[in-house]
Image (cartoon, rainbow, N blue to C red; front, side, top):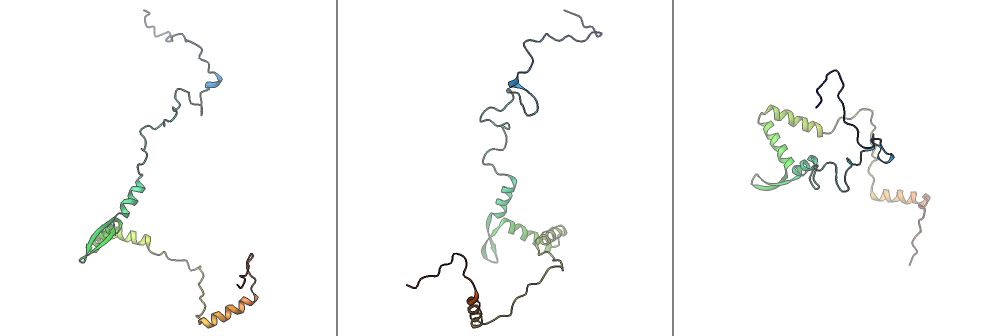
Amino acid sequence: MDEFDPSKPPSLPAPTGDRTPSTSHVVGYGNVPTIRRFKPDQSGNRKGRPRGSKNRKTIVRRLAREMHRVTENGRIRRRSTLELVLLTLRNLALGGNERAFRYFNEITAKYEPQPTDSKLGYLVVPAPISDKEWIAREEELNKTRKPPPGYKPRSAT
């Protein structure tokens, strides 16, 4: 056995076989070695999200919309989980809980009508007219109106 000599570089075993890449097995960006490629019908993430499992958004929506029977003032009512949580939050806020009050105000401010800019226009509504006046006006307009394209009047039978 050879002794270790720190002044000499370590010797590597002689290469066995041809190490030059062939044209069919070029390795690099976008060319994964064939031994590392996914097998047919096999994902790279074997323990990934199982089929049929729900994501967080779906779970939260389902729970928030879930209906419950609640007795209010002696009557049984159906309320969603979201309604019950908001009612509880409101009751806590009314009871003096500052944190609940702040959070309830944030939620209500988010869903209240937003203030509008003064640059918006106005909706002009005509004065109300009677049925007879409206019919007379439409009949007068119908005299000068053209029928829509493809319109065929019904034959009197």
